[in-house]
Amino acid sequence: MTNEQGWHEFIQLCLSAKNEKALSTLLELFLTAEEKDAVSTRCLIIKALLKQELPQRQMADELHVSIAKITRGSNELKRIAPDLKKFLVKNLVD
Figure 1 (cartoon, rainbow, N blue to C red):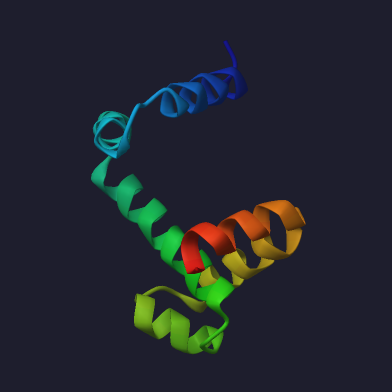
Figure 2 (cartoon, one colour):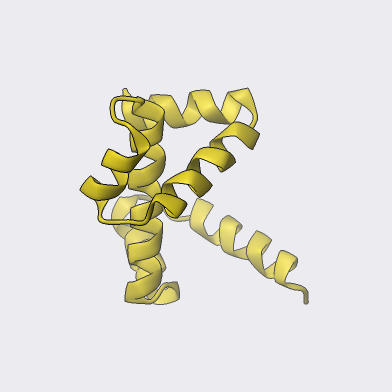
Protein backbone atom coordinates (compact mmCIF):
# COMPACT_ATOMS: atom_id res chain seq x y z
CA MET A 1 0.00 0.00 0.00
CA THR A 2 1.29 3.47 -0.86
CA ASN A 3 1.09 6.63 1.24
CA GLU A 4 -1.46 7.95 -1.24
CA GLN A 5 -3.67 4.92 -0.64
CA GLY A 6 -3.22 5.33 3.11
CA TRP A 7 -4.20 9.00 2.83
CA HIS A 8 -7.32 8.05 0.86
CA GLU A 9 -8.28 5.48 3.50
CA PHE A 10 -7.72 8.05 6.25
CA ILE A 11 -9.95 10.58 4.49
CA GLN A 12 -12.67 7.96 4.03
CA LEU A 13 -12.39 7.07 7.70
CA CYS A 14 -12.78 10.73 8.67
CA LEU A 15 -15.80 11.08 6.41
CA SER A 16 -17.44 8.11 8.11
CA ALA A 17 -17.35 9.80 11.52
CA LYS A 18 -20.95 10.51 12.48
CA ASN A 19 -20.40 13.70 14.45
CA GLU A 20 -17.81 16.15 15.76
CA LYS A 21 -17.10 14.10 18.90
CA ALA A 22 -16.47 10.94 16.87
CA LEU A 23 -14.19 12.79 14.46
CA SER A 24 -12.32 14.46 17.31
CA THR A 25 -11.76 11.10 19.00
CA LEU A 26 -10.55 9.60 15.73
CA LEU A 27 -8.12 12.46 15.14
CA GLU A 28 -6.84 12.17 18.72
CA LEU A 29 -5.83 8.62 17.86
CA PHE A 30 -3.99 9.54 14.67
CA LEU A 31 -2.42 12.91 15.49
CA THR A 32 0.21 13.81 18.06
CA ALA A 33 -0.20 16.96 20.14
CA GLU A 34 2.34 18.70 17.88
CA GLU A 35 0.48 17.65 14.73
CA LYS A 36 -2.82 18.91 16.16
CA ASP A 37 -1.16 22.22 17.00
CA ALA A 38 0.24 22.46 13.47
CA VAL A 39 -3.17 21.81 11.89
CA SER A 40 -4.83 24.27 14.27
CA THR A 41 -2.26 26.95 13.47
CA ARG A 42 -2.62 26.35 9.74
CA CYS A 43 -6.39 26.72 10.05
CA LEU A 44 -6.01 30.03 11.91
CA ILE A 45 -3.53 31.27 9.29
CA ILE A 46 -5.86 30.41 6.41
CA LYS A 47 -8.79 32.03 8.22
CA ALA A 48 -6.84 35.23 8.87
CA LEU A 49 -5.66 35.36 5.26
CA LEU A 50 -9.19 34.88 3.95
CA LYS A 51 -10.52 37.65 6.20
CA GLN A 52 -7.94 40.06 4.74
CA GLU A 53 -8.26 42.35 7.75
CA LEU A 54 -4.61 42.52 8.81
CA PRO A 55 -1.23 42.89 7.15
CA GLN A 56 0.68 39.61 7.02
CA ARG A 57 3.29 40.76 9.54
CA GLN A 58 0.59 41.59 12.05
CA MET A 59 -1.04 38.19 11.43
CA ALA A 60 2.29 36.54 12.16
CA ASP A 61 2.68 38.52 15.38
CA GLU A 62 -0.86 37.81 16.59
CA LEU A 63 -0.69 34.10 15.74
CA HIS A 64 2.88 33.79 17.10
CA VAL A 65 4.18 32.27 13.86
CA SER A 66 6.89 33.22 11.41
CA ILE A 67 6.12 35.43 8.45
CA ALA A 68 7.27 32.49 6.30
CA LYS A 69 4.32 30.41 7.55
CA ILE A 70 1.92 33.21 6.63
CA THR A 71 3.55 33.52 3.20
CA ARG A 72 3.27 29.75 2.61
CA GLY A 73 -0.41 29.86 3.50
CA SER A 74 -0.93 32.84 1.22
CA ASN A 75 0.82 31.07 -1.65
CA GLU A 76 -1.30 27.95 -1.16
CA LEU A 77 -4.50 30.02 -1.23
CA LYS A 78 -3.42 31.43 -4.60
CA ARG A 79 -3.22 27.89 -6.01
CA ILE A 80 -6.57 26.49 -4.91
CA ALA A 81 -9.67 26.19 -7.05
CA PRO A 82 -12.28 28.96 -6.73
CA ASP A 83 -14.84 26.45 -5.40
CA LEU A 84 -12.53 25.45 -2.56
CA LYS A 85 -11.91 29.09 -1.72
CA LYS A 86 -15.68 29.73 -1.57
CA PHE A 87 -16.06 26.67 0.67
CA LEU A 88 -13.33 27.95 3.00
CA VAL A 89 -14.80 31.43 3.19
CA LYS A 90 -18.25 30.04 3.93
CA ASN A 91 -17.02 27.65 6.60
CA LEU A 92 -14.19 29.63 8.20
CA VAL A 93 -15.04 33.29 7.76
CA ASP A 94 -18.80 33.79 7.46
